[in-house]
Image 1 (spheres, rainbow, N blue to C red):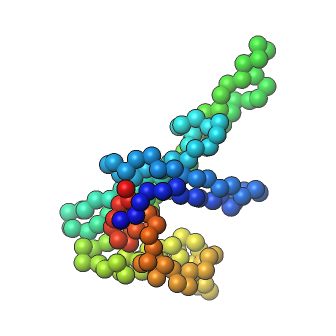
Image 2: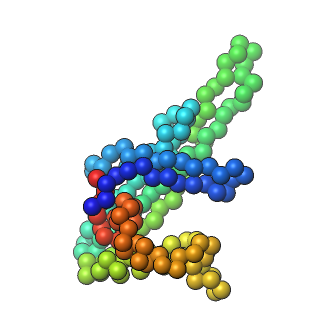
Length: 160
């Protein structure tokens, strides 16, 4: 079983690459990680939630949900009295990845499915099976991983 630990996520789409450390908050009832960005209120922090359930068919349903709030400021000039309103959450972008594994699926079956989904999510096309990133041995990397999110999807083990 993977232990909850800090998770480093990157935003490479901006001019200056940003890295965010998601810190474990709780593992009960589901594991939750949150960023700790200085000067940003709690509701403006990035949130990662991992959940699992066994559905009626007996299959395992694993879901990772990443919520990225977008902050807005109501202006830096303030009022004539010098009051500047604090930044607040304008909206939240949410990404959800859900994977179902049959109760008879092996760890390798789950790792293969995860590797294929990762390939699709990173841009697999008719000319490149792996997309933007090289995933030549992703299946084995997923099977042998001890990282909490990968373990949850491949081995059906929630971190604690």
